[in-house]
Image (tube, rainbow, N blue to C red; front, side, top):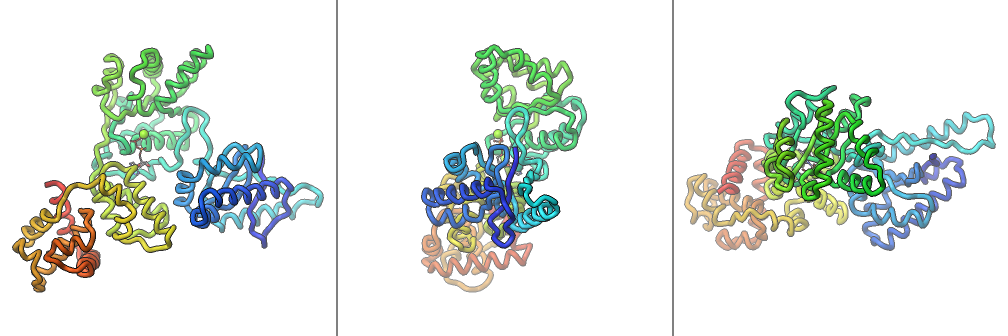
Length: 484
Ligand code: ADP
Ligand code: MG
């Protein structure tokens, strides 16, 4: 179905169908309800900036000014939005948010107007314009939907994931099965990018090679569909559906374990596809041989192709991911804050992204600049969980050793630069690597005032941004401390 446009830009308001008016009025009511349920601050910061674009295929299409906003609204307010819409505008079953700057919207309105003006018949209904929603936003025909953010372009490559990335690319770029890579088995801990790589393969094939049929689905969905097919006597259609694809990707196969009949079906589908020379990509949170819930013959078959693991992240990769994310979100986050996050949120990439989102959201909400201090405040709970148990004594000892001064100098009031600088570095590292407050750090450095600590931190931030040698020193110290 169709669409009615556009947004409430008064100057440019086009002659609209009454449906458009209705839909716009419905959006105003939805907004009002959202304001009541979420409060004024949320309304002002996240909801008001959204623009109503139209209704398409039973979905209310909203425009967010930036990617970041879209992601945030999607993860926090989507459920509510979806609940309110059908009450205000029957027939709307979902909400879709696209990134659209106000400028593009104006252009849309203008071109809709132009088309309108060209019409000979003034009585004709206003332009009904189908929105060109980018390919990435469209729902997928088979299997589970793909996340538009999970592309190769958005995947940051580093030592821990380079093999998995390289083979995924090869599979994606090939027109047929890649020799020695069938199945491609990707494994690694939670939140390290398995799903991202699988979606990236699917996106790539869909764009480069639309004739190749790709199906991506989670193992859970596979099981669910299989069980439903059996119940409704559609097992044959179910099998056909899978067997007619060129590339089948099943995510998180560790969940297939247990149920014997589904295991069996999975195994048959799997074998049939391999025999027909179709590409398979499988992921799990552990290696094939560790999938103890699966039958032995399935396990060994899964390991026949190429098994690529994604290792836990290292500092460089985490920093790279943060930098790329900040660039995409078009937000400004100071370097030391990114470095701090890369040092401290080590569990996985999902948590790292979550931490960055929280910090940015907080700054947007309270309208304050992002600093190390606000970051630590906002992420208190997360930091504690990721705490590496580096303590101030370790820091003082390690820094003193590195600069060849006495540990007691860390507590002294000596101002000579040879002593004062390492002391400042140790204070800076204490702030970065522990959850201690400024006054507490001051106390541990011979009873200094918290402003002295703050000054030290600023000074080191400043110096290290100009002096690559100092930066390297700090990096080295950081690493030593975290691995001792
Ligand atoms: P998994 O499936 O292994 O549990 P995901 O693929 O869902 O992990 O990744 C979790 C989050 O981290 C996703 O938002 C994903 O985009 C992001 N991510 C993981 N690895 C990378 C990477 N190398 N570059 C960019 N983003 C990444
Ligand atoms: Mg996953």
